[in-house]
Image (tube, rainbow, N blue to C red; front, top):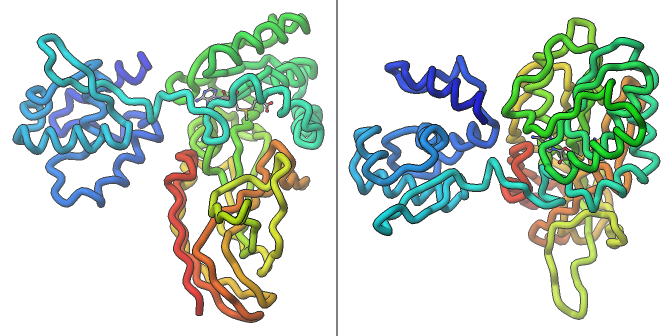
Length: 384
Ligand SMILES: C[S@@+](CC[C@H](N)C(=O)[O-])C[C@H]1O[C@@H](n2cnc3c(N)ncnc32)[C@H](O)[C@@H]1O
């Protein structure tokens, strides 16, 4: 946080306003630009207002209207808009005037499954999901060599840091959540590895990471990369990898299928998004093959943080479709980890019902913002 503020202080002095090239823009704040299309007349870029609030702690109407040379009405529209989307929150100032402070969209500790923080109550489930954890453990065992400097982003219980330290690595381990951090600290001490693991209670998006590391480990996955910030985390971290260094895991691919899922319970229809896990029923019918909608290598610099795609899916059965099933495969060198109970379990996303015949063509338009939660996903489906 301090670093951002220092950078902002420097950059806001530029006469053109904030120089986007020079500073690292937190991903959620960057995404504000996407909202611009939804406002008819926008006198200034919204993220500049958020930066101003970030810089000052709080603002009032007068301040924004003067700073950006806009009317109080325009300033109020913008502040209210950003409040509606939780980028800002309204506060009372002295004399009971309205003020605005930073809201909770970027800084919030969101609760599972909407990420990014996975509270300690679920961390045991992550560890004991043996299939998930073994893939990471095997990759760490194969990759980390004595003396390697390793980044572990989103350490949770510290499991991957401990495995890397046991292989002789010096691990820089980051955890944003206070409770998780204390839990990891305890576990690391119990394993007597505190000399080899430098554990930090920090938001990886705010601090500078260690440079020139040999290995980066990051498990901020959720199905289709939507609810957790794997893409943004690796976009930032990859700059800190040494030439020839390794990332764990390396890549991912996301697919969609047309399905009919059970939406009726007690004679009531519940067209709700849900994980195909935790005892929920599997889809009644899968009515198409899998279509790949996205592929990503975490070695790339500047991977796209959103996708907008259109595709035609062919049904392979007669029946009814009422959902899209999202699955994500993750690759560790050549080994593929498909969904497990706690690692990218398939997501069923409800769509309007369509009766279909085998061979029908269904058009799917899809927009997703990675790491921003399922509320940002837009899907439109048309029959042939
Ligand atoms: C899916 S859990 C993985 C935990 C552990 N690495 C494992 O695989 O068992 C992701 C972890 O990242 C942490 N996290 C999320 N956003 C973070 C951020 N911006 N900076 C640091 N840690 C973060 C969460 O609190 C959570 O503990």
